Image (cartoon, rainbow, N blue to C red):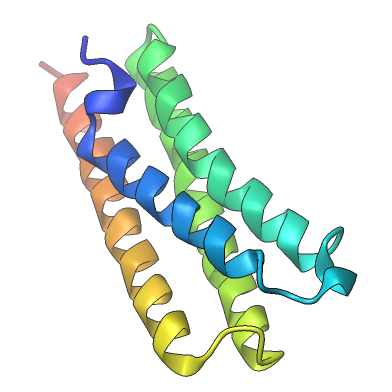
Length: 121
């Protein structure tokens, strides 16, 4: 079994998490326990769930945890929308990150589909 750090989906998630930390460091201090905390936790949860899925023994468990990761991706996208509406991030930054998280969702879905097919082999 591959180490989770070798998975492209995990690497993508890590790069995006680093970006999230950089942009949220510029948010107003009043958001430190609000939006900053929420978006960082969601973004971190994505890669944590991807890593956890690699440690699961059954295909069903691995897929279930990956679905959680996929859900967290959409949560991050929602938080990014809020940040954009509140003018904490500009349009270019929002669109770049939102698009990157859409790619991550597709990568995660591809991994889920791959595992679903393998469980029947």
